[in-house]
Structures are given as structure tokens and as C-alpha cells.
Image (cartoon, rainbow, N blue to C red):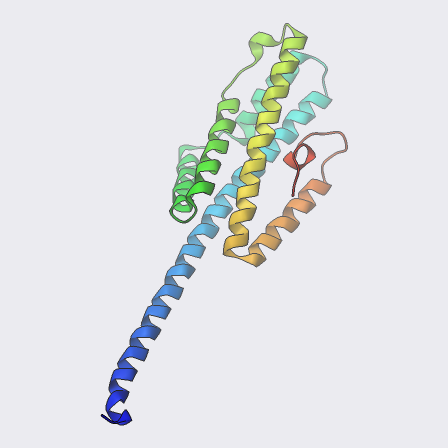
Length: 197
């Protein structure tokens, strides 16, 4: 058998290999595009979490009355995280999409968002008469709130790094810009409490 007899077989094998490679590249690009959409949804949620904390600090800075603090805490959640059903569905779809490729990250993300929503739905009005108890409860809630926001943001950056380095850089720069605008003394971003290794 001569080499020219093998050329059709080599051509078919090469064509098949290139077709498979093209299909794989197209699949990865589609998957990356989907994960980027999930990142955008989660980044919006993260920003809303930061807006809630910013509003809560505003209420605490402008009043020393615990009832005002609690009213402001609840109002902050209502204003910035009163998500319509479509937004909740979109967040859940994003978590499901991420779980297909990164199940552990999706599990941690779901846990952090559930923890945050638990805090959002809790009212401390019954504790405002006892300052010591209220402050202890509020501190616990705020640490949990910041912890959940920290996990969500960390997972967003981890996903962005895995999918698109340019996106990761843009998100990092955007968050750095946001953190520079935080008023001295306000506890708004999780990096003020937790290590950002």
C-alpha cells in the first residue's frame, strides 16, 4: 500500500478531528457565555447587598434611636433587595447553571444567598427595648450579612477568573473603585471584616 492510497483515509481522519475540535471550542464558548451571564446576575445581587449595607450605615449614622436603626435596617432590605419573582428565578437559574460546571461553588453560593435572605426576613423590633440584647443580635446579623456578601463576591471573582481574565480584571477594578468611595468609619464591604487573600 502506497502513501497516496492512505491520503483519503488521512484526509477523513483529519477532517473528523478538526470537526470535533471545532465542536468542542464552540461548546466551551457557549458555556463561557452562559457563565458570564450568571456572573452578571450575581454581580448585580452583590451590588444590591452592598447598597443595603450602605443604607443601613446611613440610618445608624443619622440616629441614635434603636427603633430608627431597626426601621432603617428593614427599609434598606425593602428598597434594595425587594427582588421581583423574575429576579429570584434568574438568580436560581444562575446557580443551577454554575452547578453544571462548578458544583461546589454553586453549593456555597446557594448557602450564602439563603443565609442572606434569612437575615433579610428577620425583624428585630421585639429587641429594641433592651439595648444590650438588640446590639448583640444586630452585630450577629451584620456579621452574617457581611459574611454572605463576602462568599458571593469571592465566588463571582473565582468564576470570572476561570472563564475570562479580562472580565475578572474589570470586576476587580470596579470593586476597588467602589471600596474607595466608602465613607471612613462605615462598615459596608466584607473586606473591612474578612481577609481578602
